Image 1 (cartoon, one colour):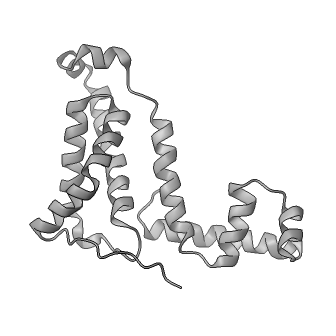
Image 2: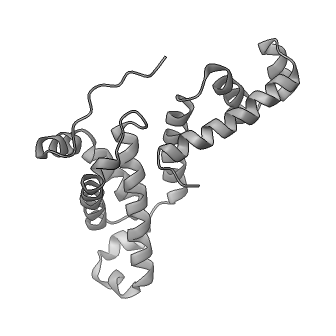
Length: 181
């Protein structure tokens, strides 16, 4: 059964971009601020995120990913790009707020893990129930194969097969969503 989502605003129209910004701009700003540790860069990141989303609006497919997930994927890439620019041009740091720089940016690993978790959750929703259950029990919960197979009432070899084909389907779903390894 397909997942039903509310109508997504069209990024081709000004009203749609405005609605998307109203719905997700604050979250994207907080994400960028925590990732970059600089309020000015965070504002630039949000602006660049919506600019890139508007430019790539024809590639967005609401059947593949939720708008929020798609925007966070773009924001993550923007933050990485801005971080690389900052590292490549250390003289720009002298122009920034020294208190913010003294505190340092929080580790991006936590945010990367959060965004990655959202993307995996979205991709798992596209799998069949048997494959999703096999992957959830073995990979996400870390349960042993024999224990999961016994709980599901199937042979271990069947569970291994479901995990194998589930991982392949998950990889395809994430590629369709535009997630790069």
